[in-house]
Length: 286
Image (tube, rainbow, N blue to C red):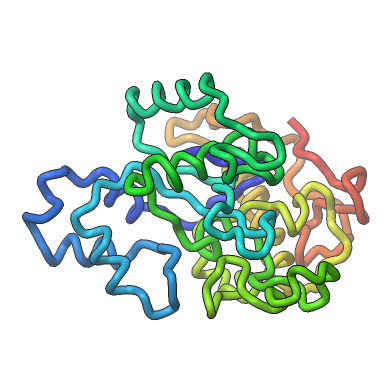
């Protein structure tokens, strides 16, 4: 599993591992009910809100080598098919042949500046690297190997699902207010319940250690930042506990002081921010 440094895991991802690690003989045979139940647990990106049985059926006899999410925020209207794989989360089945194939792709250099890999994948930020290359690999070369996940559940960034109604470009007027991912109906990730989110990527919400000041206290961004600081505090508390043999824990350095003295928005920052901005962040003291 590859995560960006500004990511946070909130819930177990066992179902993803279980599906990827299923023996090939289990596809198309074996315990049918177990497989169906397992597949139904996956937070998959669906073509429509009701396309549950269709996606499950497609995966039923498929070997899954990769789970990923896509970043529809960086594409132009009509380009959803070529959206980049979001670099904040990748779950891969290790495979030397696949690795060698990636090396060959890079050495071939089939990347066109301003247009991307294969002339289609990667005209956006990060397109020359992972986000564009993986999109090209799973969209053009091996579309059967990867599965796109629901970005409101995995790699959640609290992004707006639709194009801005006030887009100035006249050529995009028909796209105003429509779903960025090309669907007729799309979930607004900013309204996803915290309990339904497995992992977070702090991009649009800002980094927790930047002590962001613009957030609505009831917004999802505020709740996600609060979770980051709650987990930080929990980590500090765990390092103060003793091992069962009476010795201090050697897993992590023991902080000199638990918690922070910051009074800025404690309901979000748990005492670790004295004001707005990165200089107001109280770092962990070792």
